[in-house]
Structures are given as structure tokens and as C-alpha cells.
Length: 305
Image 1 (cartoon, helix red, strand yellow):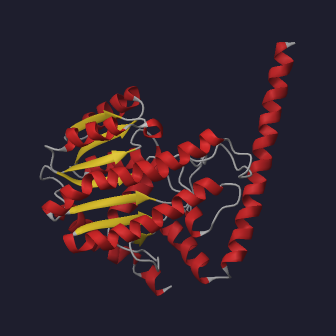
Image 2 (tube, rainbow, N blue to C red):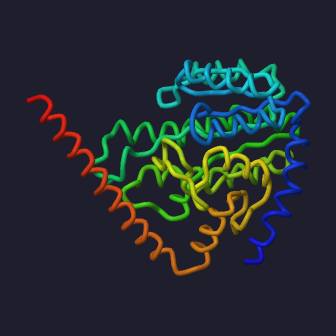
Image 3 (cartoon, rainbow, N blue to C red):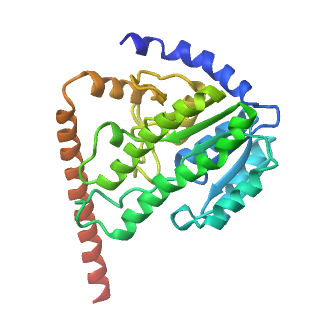
């Protein structure tokens, strides 16, 4: 509880130190993947408000153009777009990204691109293509993007890599096995490279994220524990560098509601209890998803008659 009491003061200090040190307002650029929806778009908008130029990466050029136009209309920053479908990205795609960012003063990378299951499903019946996409986007793309900027960041002795994680790594999630496993990898990977890059003044932060209103989470209404992407992005930047209640190195839980939930999981009852809670929660979500599928199928069948 003592850690929670210092969320505000700790975050206030880190916000100004982190963004100014990373070149905000001085020509610095940030790469944001998954930047046309959800948390990624929230980061792009908030970074622009803080005078950081942007390299937006996503799979839809139309959406990239729309977000870039929106940001340029609201903020006086430069915006560059690169279309990459991370689920099917080739070696040439990553070489193209590297070539595009080479002349830019890139100091930040926000890895937000992600894929989850359509709905909670038994691991043995989830289709192989969905599992492949989860691993390709959540694991391979994230590692390749971080490796792509590492040499540049180390050479300039300044940089930040932010990897968006999930509570499904803190509490392994039944019926979301591949997604949960992918985020567990991201946490371990972030902590490992965080230790490697720290001597070069390069920070790595794994964001332990609970529910945020987005297409990925399928949550639409915000509340104290479930912020909008804009609210979440603002709190992340406000508390850059702060653990915000997490006991783990290189891990941050910047949203206050998420920090309280994280504290409860780490300190109240054992992990088996929380896995059982997750099992019951996702069993109910699965039941409702299947019921919706059946209802839609029945409606379509009636219309076709």
C-alpha cells in the first residue's frame, strides 16, 4: 500500500524528466506500431501533443492516412507512415522499415501491435492460422522491431522501448492459452533486454495492462478499472519510468486502477485462486460468445428461407 501512495508524486517527476531527455520538442521521433486503433492510436495522439514526431506503422494504409491527417490537424509535428502487415511481414518489410527510419532521430519505440483470440476457446480447437498470427505479431514482430532499433539506441546512448503487455501474463488465462503465453514471453523478453540495454542509457518498460476499451479487448464502456485508450496513454507517459506498484524489474503498471488490481493479485490469496477466477470469467465469456454466434446463425437461416 505504501507504493500506491506514491503513484502521483513519482509519476509527476518521471514525466518531465523522461520526455525531455528523449528529445520531446527537439526533433525526436517515436515509432508506434498498431497505431491506427486502441492503445497504439492513444500513444500516437498523446506523443504528438507532447511535440514528438511520429512514425506510424500499421497494416491499413487508409487508416494510417486518416490517423496521420487527424494528428497533423491537431498538433504541429511531423508524421511518417509505413504500411506493414506484421502477421505476414517478410524480411524485406523489416529492411524497408529500417531504411525509412535510418535518417530520423528516433529515440522511442512503442510496440502495440497485437492479436488475440476471437473469443475464449479451448487451446486444442483454436485454428492454427489464428495461433500463427498471435505468435507472429505478439512475439516475432515485437522482437524484430526492438532488435531493429537497439543498435541505433545504443550508439546514441539514449532510447526507450515500451512493450504493451497484459495481465494474462501475470495470471495465465485459461481459454486464451496462446495469447497468454505470448504475453508471458513479452514480459520475460522485456526484462532480459532491459538489463542488457540499461548500461547504455536505454530504458525498456513492459506495461502490465489490464482491460482498456479497444477492439482487441472487446470492452466498450470505460470505468475506474477500464480506461479509454487516450486515458491509458496519458497515464503511461505521465509515469514513464515508475513501477507504479509492480514488484518486478522493468515492469510498470501505470494506470491507477490496474495498479490496485496488480497489487491485489501479487499480495492477496495465491496464484491458483486467480487462475481459477480467470477460468470462471473466460468460461462465462465463451458461453456468451457461442450463444451470440448461434443467435446470429439462426437469424441468418431464417432470412434465407
